[in-house]
Amino acid sequence: MIFISIAAGYAVKIKAREVYYAAHKSDYSIYPDCRNEFVKAVDTAVYLANLWNPVEVKAPFIEMTKKDVVALGLKLDVPYHLTWSCYEGRQNPCLSCGTCLERTEAFLLNDSRDPLLNGREWEEAVKIYYRMKENVEENL
Image (cartoon, rainbow, N blue to C red; front, side):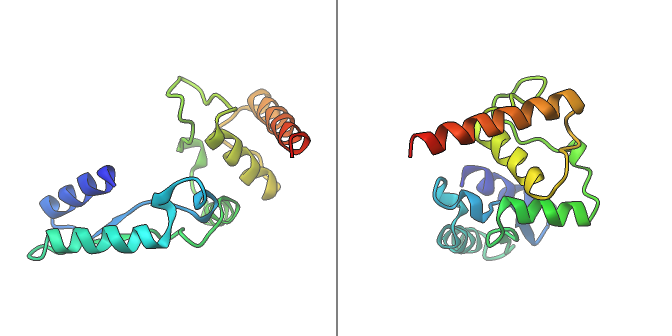
């Protein structure tokens, strides 16, 4: 919500009418800001705070899974080699945080390799993904 508020403030400054963010359905159960209710509430708050320069908050992926988002990006030739998901803030993705695992899974489910990673890194990401998945299934 803080980042959306900052983006909305910047939108007012540059006279933009919309702010977009990439919340998606796969994160619904983990992150409250990935829910339709949140999008509606923050959109209303941003609107009310800027009545003379209205800004609309949009979350176009809110009903899509990460797999669906990656599929759409592949169809649209999104330069995924320029995108970043890892939360660790290192030089290279850690390959094992929740977001890295979700990204690997989304590319696997689309029968595609993550173009951000070189061949060796992709093999390692897939190994880590299946190892983590196996651990989760064992603990169920």
